[in-house]
Length: 224
Picture 1 (cartoon, helix red, strand yellow):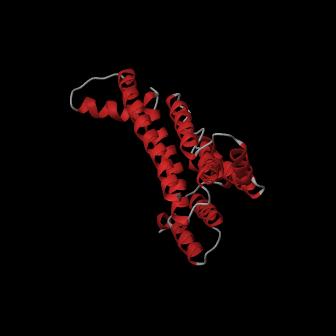
Picture 2: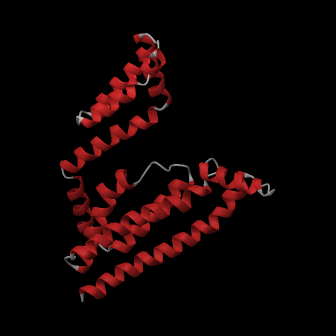
Picture 3: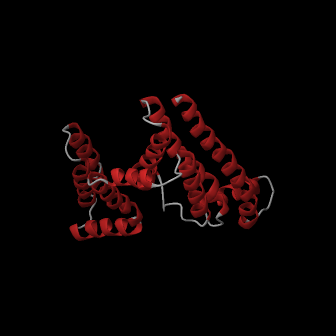
């Protein structure tokens, strides 16, 4: 019977979620209950919490970054980003996103995959700047065109990351590709795979860069 008491943590989770209590509090109480009923002392349970946090501390960075970005947005980060673009001569949506595509690919190729992203840069900076550049060049945007500009900003980040990170040798995708080739008896080093990722990245830059410039021009034709 005692071994089933350990499962009471599941019951705590079910009841807590049913009562719509704070999820973090519910999970914490469930973990404490499971550990104590499993025969661990309070100190051992807390130690286990500390070890898990230390082993996965990179996850907690998200909870630090997001509130900071939220505060920056609340105090006018997006408005300042738009103001900067409005003061720049020759700034167009296509050129801006093309520059960001190069930045994203270059940093990803160096292994800096987390230096930018949808939450860190696209929402607070890139998307507002792209929208401001489009309005500066083509006038007020309708809602459908505005959504396309925001979507193209996010797509630029994805393309830059996806085709840039494979150039970096010590990345999980390279190891995955190497493992798949090994199952078919093809032995390739990570360096070989990285080198051959460069032409693909160049093609991705040219293709998506062309799409960006064509989309920018299509907004101009639509405005006319």
